[in-house]
Structures are given as C-alpha cells and as structure tokens.
Image (cartoon, rainbow, N blue to C red; front, side):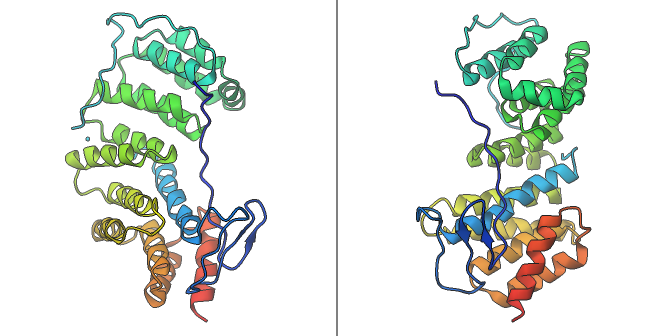
Length: 305
C-alpha cells in the first residue's frame, strides 16, 4: 500500500494576480478566457472554487463544536474481540493499525503506532494539546466528548486519518452526536471524499434540520461536486446555491454563505449578483480570515469597474 499523504487545501489566487507558488494566472471577472496552470491541466473555475472549499473549513474552525442516523461501519468496543495483529510497513499501514487498536480500546498501543508516523510525531512535538487529549481518552474511554475533543485536536493539526476514527468512535458512543457527524464531514471534505462528507452532513441534518452552518457546509460539497467534470454541473451548482440560501434563511448574518454565493455568481458570469454578495460579505466580515477579506476586496474592486 502506498504511503498516505495528507491533503492540503489551497486558497484560490486573488483575481487578476499571479500566484507565484502555483504558477496560476487568474483572469479578470467576466473574462471568457479560461486560465490554466503551466501544465495546462487546471482550469480557472477549479482554482476559483477552492475559495469555497476553504470557507467550509473556516466554518468549522470558527465553530469547533459544530454540530446525525447514519449506518457507520461497526466500531469495536474495548470488550470486543481484539483485532488481528498488523505489522505496519508504511505510514498508511501504521495508521490502519492505530485505528484498529484505537477502536479496540488499546490506546497505549494505538499511540505507539501513531508515533511511528513521522508526520504525527512532528505534530505531537509542536502541539502538546495532542498528548493531553490522548490522555483524556485513555482516562475516559466511554466519554464521547473525550473522543470528540481528540478528533478535533487531530483535525486542527491536519492529522485527518486519526481524526476520522476518533469522530467515528464518538458517534459509536452516541449516534445522535451531531457535532461528531459534522466534524467527520469536514475531515472527509478536506480529504476530497465528497460523497462521504455529504452523507455525514445529511446525517447531522436528520437530527437538527434547521442548522445554518450545516446547510452551508453541505452547499460547499455540492459546489465541489459540480466542478469535478470539465464542464460544471449546473444542477449541482443549483443545489449548492439552494443550500447557501437555506443557510441564510436560518441565519441572515452568515458571512461565508454570501461569499460563496458571490463566487458561484461570478463563476456563472452574473457580475451584479456576485458584486452584491461580496459587498454583503464585507458588511458582515469580522476580519477573522484575512485572506477571505482580501479576496472579497479584490472581487468588489474588479466587479465594480
């Protein structure tokens, strides 16, 4: 099995500027030209929508307790039959072994398997809260909150694979744990597992159907799914827009939803609608994400010309 890499989200380059890291030239709003990277493999619309992708993560970071009936694969309890012994030969195998040990309640062995992964060891050294959250799980293995907190700490550290099995364990302890479904959805989203992410958000909405943040996150999945093909899927874009608008019906002051609507309108060449959305975002923006603030300012300047 090849070594597993941790996906990273990249923010779209500001419109009209070069992204020296990615070699991307982004055309002006409304341009018919489709910009590509130097290899000619990444169209402009895919770069633009990454801005939406980042905002899903921003929602989660801003609300770490984001708050599902989903039939998840069975998770072993500490009293269950022990999983077979694995002999890891790669990071992916080590993570798999750690997950099996974690689900079986063999936490000391799980921590040891995780520490054999260089990326994990580096995060552990840099973030002492990881060890603290691990200890909390070992001390209270039946506490859904302990597993949820550990999963959140892992996810913040971009340790997405272990975060998945922590959130799954929290759900195994309480299948109505909305926060765990949502954060598991965010982890899947960051991994590019869009169908899995959507399933988690649907599970959460089955419990709390009027949660604006979850509708927003669901909308970002639809938009990403719409852009998986060479020509954006308009039906999926419509579903994304519907979720953003549902989120705003529930919370008219949700700035990320306005930003995302602005991106979709701009993608569709609807300049005035996009401008209105970005201006509304600016009215509500608290500056917590300087890059989103800068992107909105650039969009407004160019769409106002």
